[in-house]
Image 1: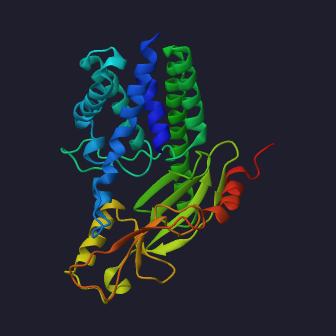
Image 2: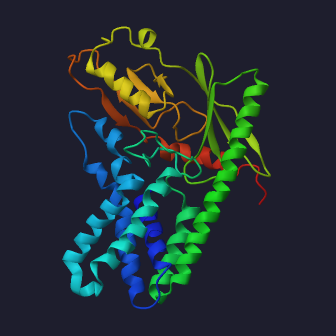
Image 3: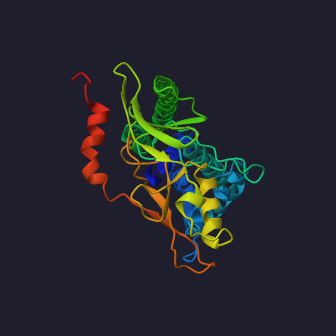
Length: 336
């Protein structure tokens, strides 16, 4: 999730068990601890731009790291503002641990993938029930937490947590409905997919991007589950084939190894960019759910030396122009 949401949810849990003067301290500890796991973004290498993909949402987000990560935050807070807190270290640690705990779990509810069981498992947990930014989730949670802080009353934070659980449950329901609609679309085309995924589109849980895999290609569609259900047929992309798509690529080169790393990150939902450039894209994501226009990719260089890395790139340049079309798919034909 976005940092503000992570901080708000992190503040809600410790605030929910406090009233009176300590409520502000509890919320502050939880807010900062709720942000802390994303400090893993500093793990970057300008020569290897894929490195951060391997470490983002890795050990700092793992369940086993909660005591360590929260202790680091608590130690920093205790050392900097011991007299202001008027609490023992263990009490601050507990408040920070509650806030820290929410981060990895909330991230796992999105679609990027989180190493919750690191180092025992390299599985990226991605429950795909909420977008990384969703105002209908964030605004009520943050508003209730703010009122709880101002009134020094944890009951408002319990309301925030209740809304968060309810919204995630609704997202789970929508996710299952979107998968069902994707199966129906595949069957109507006579396809028997080997894999189907569904992910919420930007900022909502009404419209979903679905991707299913056949023997030769990926099919992308958009579905809107619920009382006003509607499907939007999308595009196809041929599955990545290195010999066909990049015949010039040396199999032992660093760029070839980087494609393997990107494939693991992308759960092998990879294809050559449809614009004909020497890029490998992640088909799972796109601002418009019916198009093959990846939000991120890796760029290859035909002239690069064997030891040179591929370059990770992001592209959100068309988001502004595509937003009206996205809104039309989300809200079109809905009753006023």
